[in-house]
Each structure stands twice: as C-alpha cells, then as structure tokens.
Length: 219
Image (cartoon, rainbow, N blue to C red; front, side, top):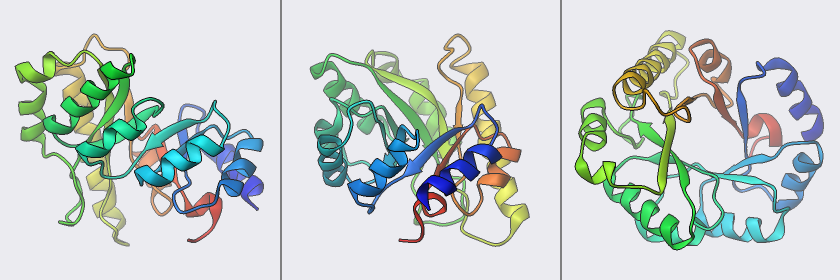
C-alpha cells in the first residue's frame, strides 16, 4: 500500500516539488518500506520519537523536524536534522545557531508564518518577520541558513479561503526574497500543502509538500 501510494504521488506532482513523507506516530517498519521504495525525506514532530527513529533507521535519511520546536530540545536533534520547518522566533533561531556551532555544522531552517485564521496554529506575522530579519542579532547568526518559508492553511472546506492563504504565503516569500535574500540562492522553498490541500498548494506556488495519511494511511 505505502509503495503504491508513494508511486502515485510521485507520478502526480511536478518534478520540482519536494515530497516530505510525514512519518510521525508511524513505526520504523513503515518508514523502512517507504525508504526501500526510494523515499529519503521524512518529517517528524516530536523530538524523542525523531531521535529514536534516527538511531534505528538508515543514515542517509534526511530528517525534517516539522513540529513546534522548544528551544531546550534543539540540542537533541542538532547533530543530524536536515531542515527545521517551524522557526517562529529569534530566540529559537539563536538556540539552533548555538547548537549548530557545537556540532560544527550549519542547519537549514524555514520561517513559519501564521496564515490561517485559527489561533491554535503558530507562526510569525509579516511585521515580526521583517523585524527579525532586519535585526543585528539575526545578521550575526552564522550557523543557520534560512532556505524559505512555511505555513499551514486553515482546516476548512472553503477552497477560496485556503487558496487565499497560500497566495499570502507566496507573496511573503517574494518580498523576503527581494528584500533580504536576493543573493542567497538557497532561499527558494515555499513549504505549504498537506494531505488535504497539497494540490491547491502546488497550484499556488508550493515546492515542498508534507504528506502523512496520503502515504501511510490514516493514523
């Protein structure tokens, strides 16, 4: 089943769209099946679960941390994590930078924007993002690499609203690219779209989608 679903998704999405297989709550055996079918990028949202899986599974997996990350937990994943998706404060960025230095590496990060009309979702608003990126403290961070933006749309059947929110995120990306990352070729990721809305997200400019149940089945 997992192999078939992966194959169908790969056939459907454009080549330039990165597929993050959201493996949170799934056993390592399921991840291994997806790995054997060629999938290398997996997303986890709990530090303890991620570290256990990283130890148990092949070492060429690119692990993306996709959940809300507490500063005091960064140290547990800093030695191996490929991308941290949900960066929403200077405090968190400074801690990622600190732990990256300790591990002699640079960690790729996405800035998370609050684009939904749900209070429960985390993320920066545009003004806060500008404040962060324009700060001297941010400029001094040498071991974090901002590679793009991410955001989650409102969980609703209203397609127009979802489309609107995705368009907002794309416009944030474009402004940040021209104002702050003009000469940073790594800044090119727009991560939006999950199992329920990834087709819409791709239409609106997403080049990284996070799919869980579509690949692994319902939790």
